[in-house]
Image (tube, rainbow, N blue to C red; front, side, top):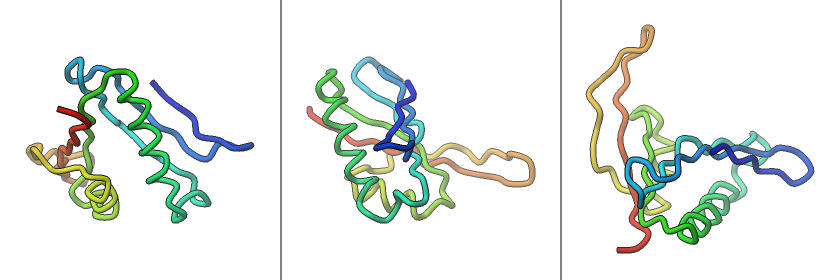
Length: 109
């Protein structure tokens, strides 16, 4: 599911898989904000709204992945309460090799 974030203009997108990898988990594939929307606590507010929506639909957990080298994204998600639970083996894409950190946050138990 692709969700657009807008006021009068598109300010970002949220890509979500509902019920993946299991029926109680929502997988957040992407949270992307326009440059002008960044740095004003917008990401935190968008994630909080997303989490309320996910809980209203029965989600108990949110999962996502972050490329290890993306330290800003990792720090953002850790501030939202996510924790690393797994790391993928290194994979090469073109000339770059990446490990993806798998993070999750339990919403209710």
